[in-house]
Length: 406
Image (cartoon, rainbow, N blue to C red; front, side, top):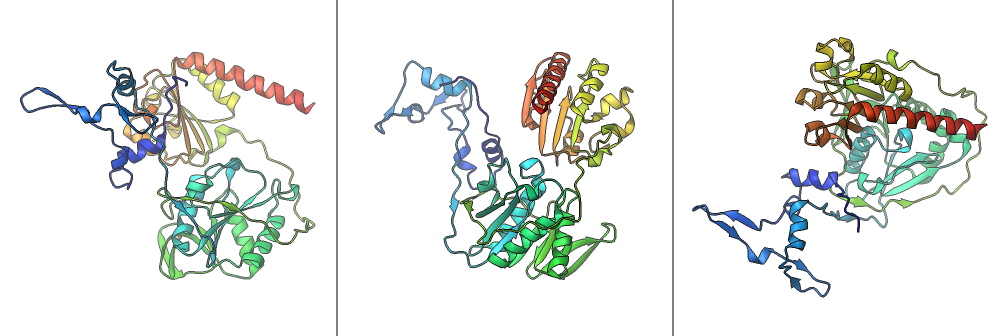
């Protein structure tokens, strides 16, 4: 077996969360402790391992216990399986799936759908085109319907509304849930509601019984109304599913979809200067801190990646970046899909500002800093050497893509 230490962020989170039902099972067994008189006490029954025949063995050489003491192995947590053989009704969810994966907004939406489904209903996720997501089971999806075809590529709201109408006719769900976002869910939900001639509830952030509460008045007021069939939910509308896993049984449409004649032509994405994107709306942020010594190389790397530049408060106070580039509770709260922190130790104000980011990558010399603990991927080393290697890798990738296209 490999000696590489593998982390399980979910197991670590459960071990820290005392309210989680699996918290006790994730705690390490204490083999020794100091008694009241300063004498080290040992639990001889807690030392050893279970052999292949189910008999407990004790390794007197200390190799077995030493390996476990030097590093904490990731514990495989098997969540209880939630199965619904014959759903009484369906709660349909249409996630944005930006980049082919579930975003934090999508997971909140699935958590809300799980609450509406209860124990008798099933959550049906409708996904357009190919996806890269492998965690539908732990996100709360009971049934998965993938609508594939070139007709759904790019910007195709008319074809997608037609697909949702076919799903609505076949499954007749009790509720439709879409994210009220700028990534397409808000527009698609309103088009779908107009097609069904129904009035949707928009910017919903809470549901209580047969009533939903949405934001109104530029986000300064709450508007309560009876719970409709079509719901466009805001971010953090519910807690994501975390304590169960689901079947994710594939389902298909009973009828083939006819390709509609589009009245909208997709001309592709428009190139935008990353520096012109506001920090609060940027999806890819490349942020530098006190550990950055070569700022010219930092700017070159950000340009090569096509990322929006950000900075910690220390870098802003030292004059390396403008004040509107500051990330954190004392600067701008960001919701980027990818946040790269270069030479940032991770002060509490900065960690608060990136709390809603999906993926955090940290480049730092200190493996014990708070940013490394927060990051989903960490690179330990000198930032200059890492940034130079990153530029070379990006250029090689783009040159290879150009050759393949030619």
